[in-house]
Image 1 (tube, helix red, strand yellow):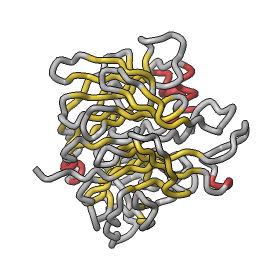
Image 2 (image 1 turned 135 degrees about the vertical axis):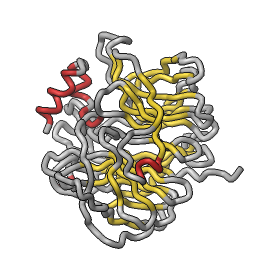
Image 3 (image 1 turned 90 degrees about the vertical axis):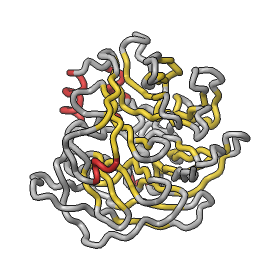
Length: 355
């Protein structure tokens, strides 16, 4: 799986370190054209605060569930994911749902699929009580993000790279492969792998592997905030999964040694939760914690690997038992508490206030 991946990454001239350090950001570089029927009557989504991923392996054995839980640890429920069939399908869209997000009205799930036996995955959308469908070809290597009114998603495009896509959820629902939407072009020296719009849709924050800031091979992608009116960009540091607070005043992200907050202008950077992966000696972190905000802007939720550090530790190996736990932290006090043992990549459902 990794050998052809390295070949593809070399063609976009990424540094050797980034290739070794973050294949998780590029592991799915191809796409599927449809999906197979798994169940004719999927259940409705449980109405919980948080949706989370249950799969820990990128390939091999498939885990086709997603978990739902309240922020206080109550109401744990699992949902089996099923898919619509497609007459044009040539490769089965089997695999695990990962990086889930859900709309505030509990009507729509968006997630990535990870294929079994080396088959790639793609972005998928699932309406409440309906089977999932695979979104248009070429979308969704990393976790998508919702805009403030939750009518669009921002996702990266597989080929050609260097672009982020602002995409109408209804286009995916209608299986429209024309790809109607807005493209955020990123200059040729960078390769964006995640982006999110500010609550006002005026700013775009994104992460991108880059050759232009440092030749010292930074340990994480560079992060930028772009003013969409002027195209002016501000470098705000190195990190993963930058996420806007509901009021647009802060950006949370995964830094080299924990969960951070920073202002959109790059100032007032502060370490909120210290965390270093226990996978000593490994060149990359397969499942880094990706923080998301509560609707009131008071909490962040994320996962952490809870194994004891060691050179042979593999957090993604389910043979080690429960490797990941979901935590939340109060952004005002720094108080951290465990929500649940098990699961990763939690997403806190953002309830949109009525006008």
